[in-house]
Image (cartoon, rainbow, N blue to C red):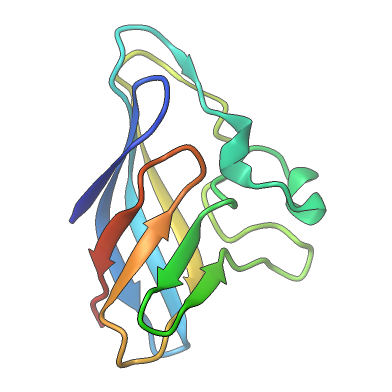
Length: 130
């Protein structure tokens, strides 16, 4: 679907972006260390919200942008403040690939394309299915 280049040989390859009937958008992909040595997953990927900082490493800093409506959507949180995204990311071994997900409020049904932004990575334009 799309690929985002990040620091230290990291890439995020988006494999799906699905809108569900409950009004959520789930984006799935693979975070890969393309280097021949281990790399630390940057702490900046979890964002800087105080609630999220206490939950540890994650992709909670990701946002989805509806460019037509000029609206930004943030990763959803559960009732305890934990982000609805892959957590526990700290170091990836050489050439390691980890499957990841991020869940957001879904943009309106008329929105078919959004931008995915992750701190320190390029922005990717992705199509929503469902």
